[in-house]
View 1 (cartoon, helix red, strand yellow):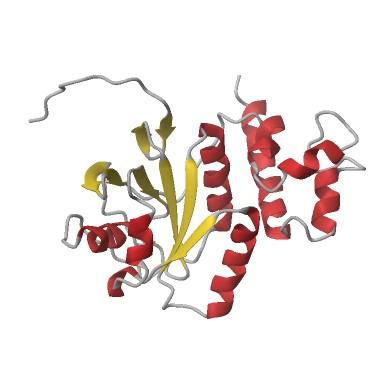
View 2: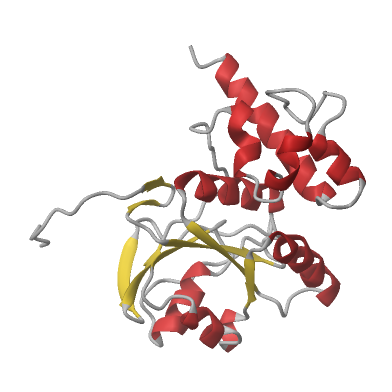
Length: 239
């Protein structure tokens, strides 16, 4: 039975995974089984920026697909300034590099079911603390085996294993403010002609011009448009 010994101030609150006072989120995706979901990743990165929590990207299962796909994903996010780590958790490849960024941090792993969060945690802790999930043969998606957030001490800090998910909503962010939480958009926002530019239909848009010039990833921009429209739809039906 747990006992509350002290109540500390809440510096931040993350709804998924449901935790408070995080200093770092490691977003885990796999190269295959399940395939990388960059739309989900871009939602997560925007949400982390909204919460002012540091983000790290971990690409797991690097042994399961071609190197070209790995380099494509790395080039998109490293160009923005995100730290991108690569791992093969089952063979403990890349685990030491991952361990270094956990020192002194309160970190949570987040990502789709089946990407290998629990396998990574077991490799980091050098013992089987969590059940590792299987992949459905029918749809190649992960089966959720972690059902609650569990916190473990590691490297002068803490790390959390969290339940996986396939959908993720960031309705706390107003659609008109979404671009401010896209790290690669910030430098080009002042170039927009119109105040309150949505960066979708307007002319003389600094973001659209940067996409055309290859300064912003087309994949990231397309994901932005999808997330923006999703937020607009939710706002229209909120009341």
